[in-house]
Image 1 (tube, rainbow, N blue to C red):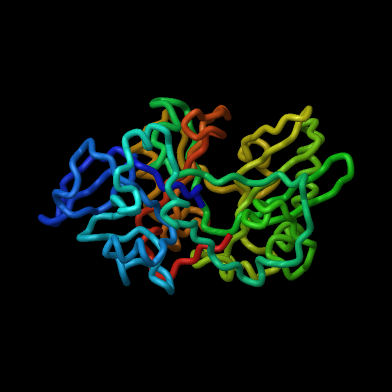
Image 2: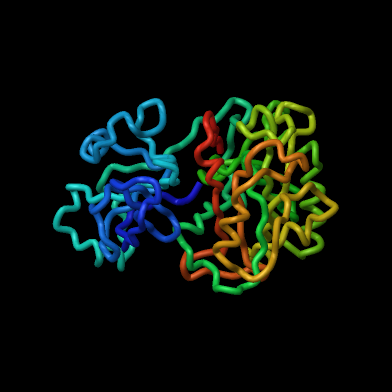
Length: 355
């Protein structure tokens, strides 16, 4: 999931092609359906992104009672309104009356706490849970921000690679060269500084042992001269998420695809191409395209059918885009990497989002 931030944004207002009483307010590359005439291009308003959970008072104020997602009808998710995808909520909450939104936008002020908006946390199935131990040396995964929210991450024409975003659950493995110690965790548990105690019933440990990932990490550590190596992959299949790619997470060999490598070399953490280091060692997420960056190209590749199974069994979750040469991003204040999620994936019924 992306980082939750509720911010003031400068709007571009576009015509809704299928509704006389509605318009589209664009924030970055996101578009949210709004009442016609409510905003004009150049206005500032508050943008509440997808996967936000709103307090009851704000839901009532915005006239959204009974209209949001989740068992409590309090979660923001993408919907189609008169044929147009609406992602997030554009609004002017009463709590911010008198606030200079242009200045707040310039400063990047986050209004989530003030408005009582929190990030939705999906439930964790038993097979993905387990006993945990503190793991201060675990190399964690990062929240990948959406290109639609941060369209300036990449320079026009910059060489990039687009890979398929696989709808599974992120498996983190950290190997320490000096001791041979292996730490395994999920994205959510790893973000809290914990690793999972080895258990044959646990999904992540089953995948790690089935694909002999510790041995792969040990070879990488020697090759890179690394003190620690992190191998990151998606575990997928039936029983993991609603999109299965024809695999089973309950099988002895669950679906697995590596997508990234990190390593600490001479005390410095760096990120490395999984395609370059792990080809022939582990299954990899499919590479869809590489070439000069163009936002429309990335958006187009986010749509369509999955390629993981080779059979186009269901919709594609989306894509991840990164520069061919790893670098830092001023727009993100961190690693240059972004995602785009497909429209059909966002609006599917009965979807799961376990971490």
